Amino acid sequence: MRPRVVVVGAGFAGFHAARRLRRLVKNAAEVVVISSTNYFLYVPLLPQTAGGVLDPRRLAVPLNQQLPGVRTVPGEVDAIDFGQRRVDFHTLGGGRGSTHYDRLVVAVGSVHKLLPVPGVAEHAHGFRGIPEALYLRDHLIRQVELAALTDSQAARAACNTFVVVGAGYTGTEVAAHGQLLTYKLAQRLPPLASTPPRWLLLDIAPRVLPELDERLSRTASRVLRRRGVELYMGTSVEKATADGVQLSTGEHIPTRTLVWCVGVRPDPLVESFGLPTQKGRLVVNERLQVPDHPEVYACGDAAAVPLPDQPGRVAPMTAQHAVRQGKLVAHNIAASLGLGQIPRAYRHRDLGFVVDLAGIQAAANPLGLALGGPLAAAVTHGYHLASIPGNRLRIASEWLLEALLPRQTVQLGLVGPQEVPLETASPELAR
Image (cartoon, rainbow, N blue to C red; front, side, top):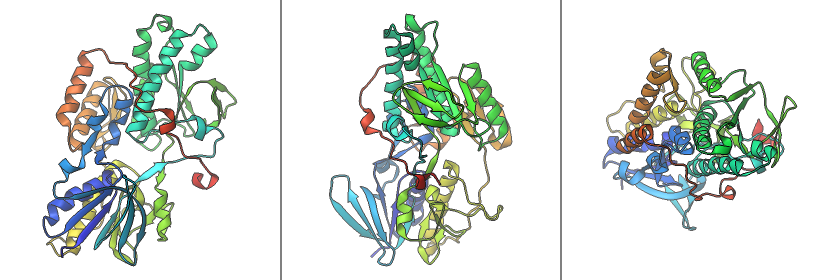
């Protein structure tokens, strides 16, 4: 029988591991992907869906089209028996199943990072997938339209105020796209023509995009401030209610919108394995193998991948690292199966980052060169088109239409607030 390689997860690491495996092993091994969705989601463009620029289907690349010859199993993994080399899962249809493996790739990704802030779990909404993006888009449009309908100045101010917590990559882009969407909509509504929506971006860090180059931070801050976004740096939320949020400064902000973008943590499934972990991520060696289980590989947000040029540090949770780790795992698995490859250790050279600030504004530092404005926006769009494994023509077409036609601001009502809840936070999860 052919050896079987099972990939758990179809995010950036899992998808690219399976894609590269398909090319390297051909018919010498069977490749199985277990995923809760039948598509690979290109997360960096999610803010454009929330902002009404892109159809959500453009971000979802079907696995069966991009992974021909790979068997995809629609399900969620419950447990892994490393002694028996068995993966147990439940299917999306409600049944149960299991499969054995000769090589295993753990790429389960991450989930919302929650803090024990009173009221956040009940009144905030995260931003991790298509349902959250669709809900947020509808919610923003709804609040602006409600603000235009009411005669109460207090109610209008609350509906027309939007708070984003977390000024990292995701939070900054959500605030940028959300502000532009609500501003354009408000300009069409006479009661709000002289009252633009109020946007606040909060973070305990001293600056926007604290994990990126300071030049990107300055560019993003300048663009956001010019649009009227209020930056509350060194500030956190102490309490959230249905009527607003209480800030660590003592200020109370009346609002009906609280978007939680404070970061991610490894999927809790990882800690259930009983294997060595580092801050919730599986410990692996430089070849991305789990100690004492050389047939098991881990990559992406689920793995604490050591950085050889920075002793004691592990790779950050970014798409760039996840993609390269997934490809390296595929290479090393092919080598372990005797398919002519030579095992390699993980090395990463930072190619720079791009931050989409909506419209013709962006911040980018390709190969260390700091850019801003329309040129950075062109680089950002080009980077995303080159990185997404499908739907490029459709995405480019929608960008063109966005530049030529008025933005559509309809509420689809496909996702309700009860369908995108934040998990209940606990002090243990905040460590």
